[in-house]
Every structure is written in structure tokens, then in C-alpha cells.
Image (cartoon, rainbow, N blue to C red; front, side):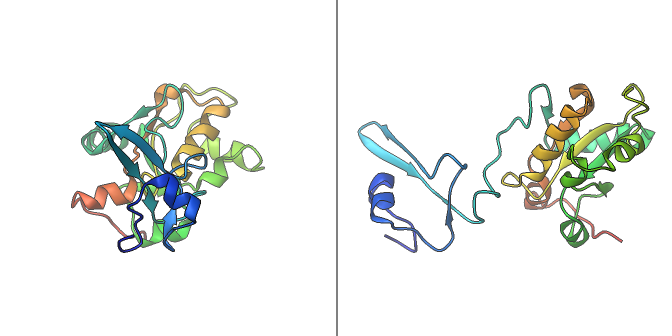
Length: 190
């Protein structure tokens, strides 16, 4: 073991109970990953925030919903958001949003889009949905903290379950972490 990382193989490490204080699961169903390649066993483990809830998220948040990168997000801001037909949504809780977010983002926490929120219909109306008609609804790009944050995929699935058309939804999986890792500017919410 070297600085909390087990080097003897994932199965042996897990069987021995070896883990650093920061070691976490990759997904709820995957503690780690091991594969034999060219006679060598390659292992992948994960350190960081506990999974669940902070699990590595799939590239596709839900069927039919596009996952976009930074350049596509900039084009969305330039065209859809600037034209008043699109919104960039930070799905984190207000505390995360207040600490740093992407320029132009509005805060709509994922939990507010859940089916059990009694005010969800009011929120959908604010997004342009009129009596179940989504034709005038905003195009949305939704993000959260980063690739291990569950809030954006949860928000996207809740919107799809409410009937929001997949072609009006996009997922920026990189989130605030991916954005700032590339040196792009973040802002603090007012």
C-alpha cells in the first residue's frame, strides 16, 4: 500500500478491508474495477466523496438527452440564452450555487423538480410550460458540481418524467469542476 492506495490488486485489497479514509465506490454497484490485460491485472479504485450520493455519473443522464461540452455550452449561451429561449440551470443547493457557478446560470435545485414537490407545476410554468403544453418551454442546459454529482441527472430525469421533451434538455456533465479545471471563469451568485 502506498499513500492509501492498495497496490496488491483490487480483490485482495477489498478482501483485506484495506481502504483509505477517502476511498469511495465508483458507482453504488461497483466498489472498484479490475481487468486482466496482457497478463497484468489493472485495477481502478476511487478516492473522494462517498458514493452514494457522489457516484461517477454516466455520460448520458437519460435516454434522448444530449450531453454537451464547454464549447457547446458557450454556443448555447450565445444563441439560446441570449435570445431568451434557453436557460442554464445549476441544479445544486443554494449554498453550492452561491459559492461559485457558471456565468449566466440560474439556481433550480434538483429537489424542486421532483414529482413530490407540490410547487413543481408552478416551477414548470416558470420554465414556459403552459397546462401540459411544452411547445413554448425553455431549452435547458443543466449542470451541477461535476461528473460525480447526482443533482443534474436527477433534475433531468424529473423533467423527463414530467413530460419535458428530451430535445429541449441538455446535460453539461463537467459541471463547475470541469468548467474551472479548464480555466474558464466562474462567478459568485449575488
